[in-house]
Length: 236
Image 1: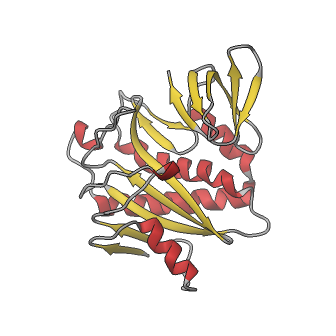
Image 2: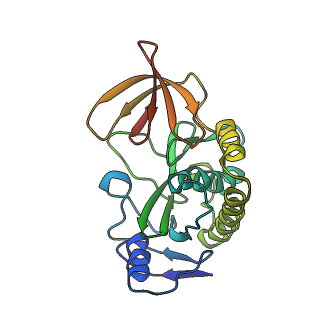
C-alpha cells in the first residue's frame, strides 16, 4: 500500500513514531510525502525536498534468520538502482556509492537513510526526480535535466516492487549474490576515494571492494587494507 500525505516533517520520523506507538506498519507499506519540512540524511544532515521528487519510507521487520541488519543498505541500494536505472539517459551510467547513494555521471541522484527501533528498520529514500539541491560539498543532479520529470507515483510503484523483490532475495539467498551484483554497478575497484570516518579521521586510498558482510574495504596509500564500517565516502 502507498499512503501519501501532502506535508510532513519526515516520513522516517512518522513511521518510527507509529512503530513506537504500537501501530502495525507492514512490510510493503510505504509512506510518501508531497513535501517534507524536516527531511534529513545521514549524520543529521538536512535532506532537500521539493514537490515532484520522491520522498518516502517503508519498514523491514527483522527476523532471526535475516542477514546482518546493516547490510539492508546494500539491499535498498540495489532496489533503488533497479528502479532508477531505466529512467537514466543511456549515455550516462547510474552507479551505487557505498553505503547509501545512487550517482548519475558522478553526481548524487538519490540517497537512503536507515533508522532502527527494536527489530524494525525504517528505510527512507529520496530521489531527485524533478528538482535538485545546491549542496556545498558535492555535485547533485535530477532526472528532469534529461527530459520530463518522471511521475512520482509511477516511480513509487516501481520502487516498491523492486524493494519487495530485493528483500526476498536478501532473505532467501543471503548477501553473497547481492554483494556481487552491487560490485557490478557500484564504485569500480581501484577508484580513488577519501573517507571521513565518524571519529573525524580522514583516510585516502583506493576502493578495494566489499567484504562478506558488506563492509567497505579500502587500500590505504601506505599499502595497508582497512575495513570501513561507517563514514562519508568521497570519490576522487
